[in-house]
Length: 511
Image 1 (tube, one colour):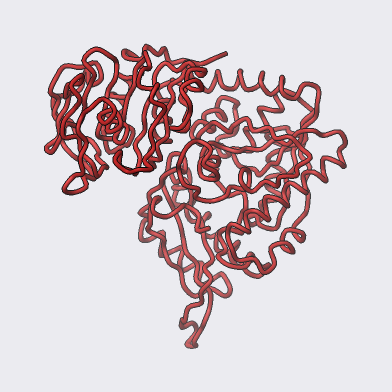
Image 2 (cartoon, rainbow, N blue to C red):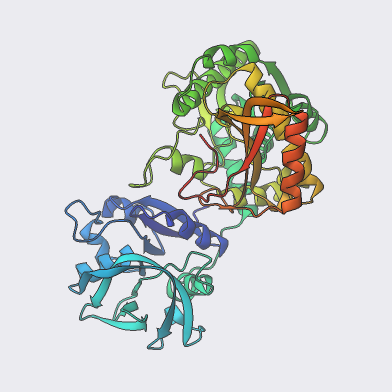
């Protein structure tokens, strides 16, 4: 079934993925594509509407991104957001100029005209600005529909369904942003809202069955919600021709190998094989400190283990992985000019010479959508709410070389963090909470003697999809308990610190 689609042209904004998420939340399928996509390729997707995202550059820069000029002749609705509005202004003959100061943060906005885009909104609303250039004069064919204190903040074409917003309706800091996007999707684009997780399950199951035919597959299982949902979808499509492989790479959390095997077998009724590969991973990681190299080594070694198991099982052609949309976005700039943040081992860390074909049923979903699919498939709630765990495991939570001794130290500290977060009934409301072992030693005093031991950092963040995150203000008493327990119970640690940076500028994981 072909869904009605809104295309989001990516001009490099940190909020591009958020635009797509907000549109999907409204029940309309949205796809992010590079701004450089040709008009012919755009037309082949039959979009009901097109959104031009924001971006960090100025329309005046020689290398600034511009779409195929034919895009502006699109007969359907166009919506330019921030840099997208500046592109529309520049193309149609308006005046864009550098601001005397960057406009960033909350700003009041006043409606000037009655317009479908702002229908149902009060005369004055609060919006979120993030731009260095400003619109000095809208093009002749356009009219200003909303004004901020300093410049036109929204415009519309007098005869076509073309709109521009200087602010970001997709962020939570624009309280009525969802209403504006909803106006664009439904009365303006004429969407019906046919995107749901129920339809995704049905259609994806059919696609997998068609792709695999009568062939067999193995699934790289981690015990998290992503790989579990991927396995359940493939199992629904091909039944017992799927075998799940859970690899103990030596980088798992405490007692994780046995607990995941029990859950998958007893609660999900999936056929799973456990593989002890601890030593081979640790051997490959010996002496390695660079985080990107760690990820690539781990990604390649996973594939080699899967290939060996496939050979042992006989006649296996496919490998199933729980790769998500943010994994793809952050690993390689396949959707546009966004910078590579890190290599995800499911994506950029895969070796080129693989003997198995990939099946990635969740590749276009965000995390919250995967959790909705999980509920649709009756996955137990404790697994649905399980916090994300990185594919490279504890290797990217140990800064520097990964050794057995350092792994043991981190496991003990991490278990204390998890226990206390759960005891405070905060686990399900936090996106991720974990311990990190730092590559520094700290002087301390314990038992009236001098110590020179390891430092543990605690990280806890709120997020919706992992693309952006804010640090959690954990209760003082909880932090005190965690710190005391780690210092008293984890041998070789004498200091605990708390990470209070958001993403951006940091990433969630330390490596």
